[in-house]
Structure formats: C-alpha cells, structure tokens
Image 1: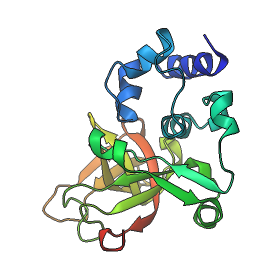
Image 2: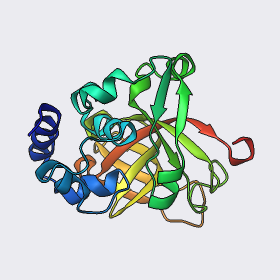
Image 3: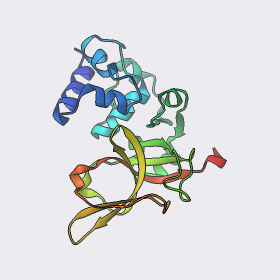
Length: 205
C-alpha cells in the first residue's frame, strides 16, 4: 500500500467510522474508499476528493495526494471541493478559486469547501441553490454562534448553531420559522463539517 493510501487508512481507522461514511462524504458510492485502499482502484485520488478528505481530517492535502498529482498543482489556484447530497451535481461542479482571494476570507484557504444549499430551511438568509463557502471545522468543543454545515443522519445540511452557555449545550435553529428549533443538544452529538464564512447567492453565480 502506497504511503498516501496508508496515511488515509490510518486516519480513517482513528475515527472509528466506516469506509462507506467517507465515500458518501465525498459524494462517491459506498464502496469507493474501500476499493481505493484495498484494490488500488482508482490508482490515485482526484484533487477534489483528496481536498475534501484532508479538510475533514485537518491534515495537509499533500499527505493524501500522489506525487504525480502534486507535481501538476497550480499554486495560484485552489480547487474548492463541493460537499453536497447530489452526487451527479457534485461531479459536474467545482470551483477553481483564486488563492489570493481565498486568503482574504480565510486564514486557512486550503480548508475551504463549498456547500450548495437545498430547500428553504435557512430562508431568507440562504436560498436553494446558494453556495455556502465554509471553513472546515468539526471540533464541536470549539463551536460558537454562527451558520454551520453539518452531517445530519445521511444528509448534509446547513443550520444556525447557538451556544447555550449555562449548560454548555447547543441549539440548532432554522432561519425559516416554519421549521422547529432543537434545544439542549450535547456538542459531541453533532457532526460538524464547517462554519460558513461567505454566501454566494444563486443570482450571482
């Protein structure tokens, strides 16, 4: 097993989560990661898949990309991966973002990913089709009030997180008042993917 494959296997093992979980996280079929690690297919991860996984594990993307892929990277452009629920949509859309621009909105530009909003749960702040740019962040102990992208069940969704200081618990809120607010949640019960740092409105895309 190559060094980059070995590193990914180690990172996944440390989480206790299944290969299928991480396959779905990057918008692939449930067997994708297992086949990559155990059968060598594909021969290497795409840059978008490697970036998405590196964001989750909070490691440099160089640990997961093959030497060949590293040689072809353009330092002036950062590939912003799209994490969404529609696999076909994710395979067609990606952002080749200007590295300097990303550095202006994030202190960790290589940790930025994009999430295409769905439904009206966060309306009027976020409409269906808007793109949330998010700083990778899944340490629930460091949460503060703000708009986050979370893994809820088998879906990725956006919600407003409010910290309840008296009990050190969390509330999940929808900006659309037609949806319920969930109070008194334990931080460790949440799977946080990232904190929204910018919203690209669908009318401007």
